[in-house]
Amino acid sequence: MRNRIVAGNWKMNKTFEEAEGLVFEIVDFLEENEIINTEVVICPPALYLELASDAAVESQVEIGAQNVYARESGAYTGEISAPMLQSMEIAYCIIGHSERRKYFKESNELLAEKVIACLNNDIRPIFCIGETLDEREAGNHFKVVEDQLNEALFNLSSGEFQNIVIAYEPVWAIGTGVTATSAQAQEMHAYIRSLLAGKYGSDVADQTRILYGGSCNALNAAELFSNPDVDGGLIGGASLIGHDFIEIIKSFPDAS
Ligand code: PEP
Image 1: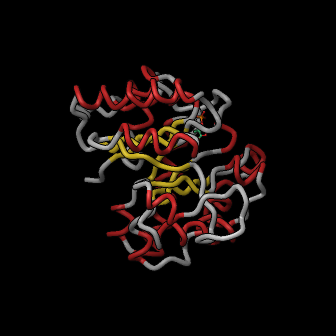
Image 2: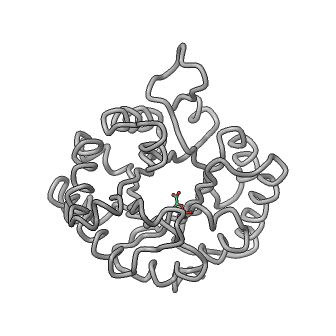
């Protein structure tokens, strides 16, 4: 059975005090409640990685970064490298989020380099793929996702790929309150898994965690997570409210 993941992407939100309160709310919950077969990952703004990492040190919570630069060190003002993240014991890094593709013009070529930088430093990428509304309405959603995988990930060896987590995030569902239906999510996740099987074989495909992201919340998580190919979620807005994020963590029928 694949270990599920519920990951919170805080994006550019929270003051220091708010971040401290939220991270301890989640850590405390997991200290008092056993959640089975589920990894809980918090991805705060980079400024709070140390705070989150310290708070989570003896807990079930793992910490992820929201971004990384592809080079190891040097004159790249404002950037953070994978060796720096590794030195802070950061376990995961979100790569390829649609906001970074859109606002920061990140190409699949750059994203492929970021993935390698993470893997070289024992950080597991949570790699985001997904189509826009126009692409879905034109019937191109499967092709878009396939191209993203081909261009950014399928250069990896099978051994390298086993450290990848995929997040299917239809762009039209991110932050919009419009969630993919359970059937749409399952259809795309199964398709992604079939592509992984074609490229790396069924063992790797069966082991790879494929998360759903896009307006997933405390009310719809259970239905989305009940699908056989949905291995958890990458949660934006709802991860900013402790109670809601905890409800999502509890959403797998056999979580406790
Ligand atoms: C995200 O940004 O990864 C995301 C899924 O956001 P939201 O849950 O707010 O749609």
